[in-house]
Length: 414
Length: 82
Image (cartoon, rainbow over all chains, first blue to last red; front, side, top):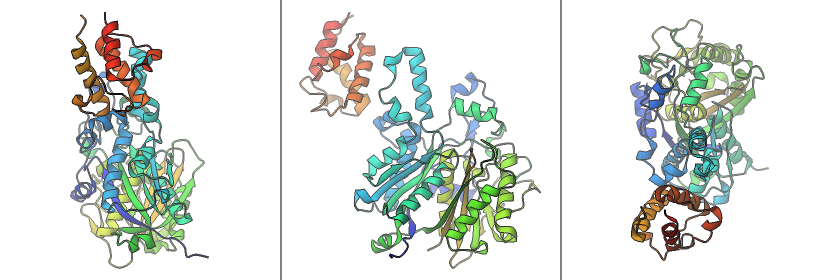
């Protein structure tokens, strides 16, 4: 019987509404800067969309990629590739057997820009004008395939799809691949490029989006009584995950360890969270238990907290249900207050931010929290960032998706 | 108005550059699309459709397999331009 394989984080990459890479993103988060802005696209007025802002990328992809890469990939795959390249370089481009390297990139929607622009081509110009790469660009697995192609990853290329939990589920999937011995290294995360009229109209029709059009940067306000929905974001975040002994042997920089992963399904409603948080709390408890920890060991939570009236309360209930009074000792950060909601990339980005919080021993402040909702029973970090204790510490990251998907991951300091 | 073969070659080189990133200077008459320029069948279809639009010709799918070299494409376009 061999010893249990441990999984550590050795590289980070991201392109987000607040920064074109991880260092710039983290600086913006500590500075409390919002990535939400009024959308410059002509279609906002053309269709008279009820929501006129979004958290679009700080650094547009065409400033980073070649013209050909931009032409041949949907935005969602472009963002994934940018984040994966950064993470891989950050990990020191580890050499190894390609058949032991995996790519796991989740997405909520996939190549929606390509799907809709090619549909326009078909209607306006006929079938011959549909781009021959339309299908391989719009398929949701295009991002994991692009990363697999880029890095030569041959252990497997996987694409968990669970709406807004996709990115964290991909990290959980990669963690299981390494633990079970299917891979030694995995490049894992999430991506989304869905700032397009149709998803916006669809989310708006659900009443899920904030309509604070006159103050975009104040629109994402988790836990505030004035919250009125989430702010749609875009981007990607990726981690390099590695088997611990191999990472140590090659002298890799180790940011944190994945202690445990918990997953569950609500089986309650296609879009609404189960209000008592039974499913979400099961995922959290499972993650903590699998990490071999107890609730009191968790010193920080990066919450899903999208800034919807119902969702934020449901998550608060779930955290209370999972941890009882121990939740009092868990400073909670809602970083979507700055980044907006990156859908299938959200859990991955918040995973990266949770790792950085451990690494820098700093829980970021939630912005726009002016009037704390008394229905929220959490210790929310706001006003200024909070120092985390020295010594061995652990943090929890939650991610939930339409369809009742719940994913929770415990990261620990190394 | 019909264009000269040189004009067609230059226009085609721009299309190839747009699709593949290859330098326009590398797109010369004797070059094979697959062997020299490493253009796959999907990119070739995009180039064909863009060429149809740019030069006002129709290049039937059956004809595409006969266009082995850049020069083959230039001649076909030149002969079939209105």
